Image 1 (cartoon, rainbow, N blue to C red):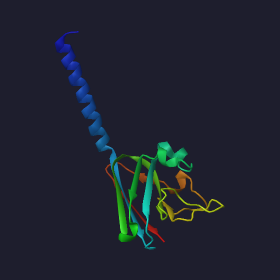
Image 2: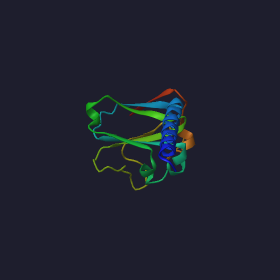
Image 3: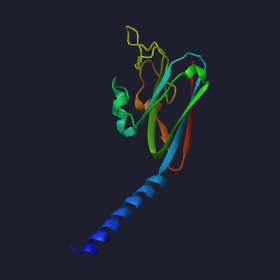
Image 4: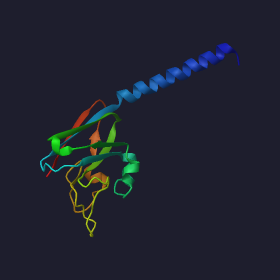
Length: 154
């Protein structure tokens, strides 16, 4: 292969990569999550975002390792509202869950029945008792769309 051919292959590869990035940008949206803390309880707020690809792990105990994005905000009582923004998400279905870690151990505290003692929430109101399915709380993000989800910790 000549040097000229090698250069043209490199140019083609660079153009393909740039083109793929442009296409991804054209078909992406943003998800803005606002959580109001009405309890004034203090702690660290942990939030995990999942795409439809990770839906099967949404209910598992170790689901956080499968989330596509994870956030944490410390000293939540000092803020009446916290906001998370996931930019450039490919169009699709997403769900998130969060909890307010009041005891500072980084884990959701549950009682002897497995019911959370610390405040928890999901991308939509949970329609049933227990942990919801991904499909029950999913949010659709379209291309070139900004979706805002507002939640309240009560």
